[in-house]
Image (tube, rainbow, N blue to C red; front, side, top):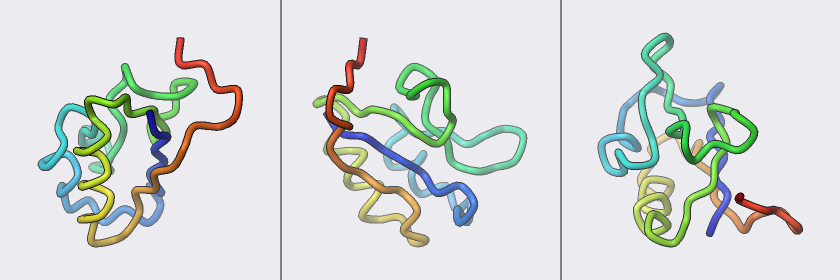
Length: 83
């Protein structure tokens, strides 16, 4: 499990992340920025989420391939409970 944070202010709306990992990222219909699909969000935040083991590879690849380098991945916060 990894934490994911999207720096939406620096997002260039290129679509690379939601095209390469559509099970985790989606385009916000209102402003065109990348966001985390609702079921993976942390505290309802559009730009923060948790990727479980089955999506880790996809999310990491999207982060590495992001031309604006706005997708940050790391370990979950200590004491984080995904339930």
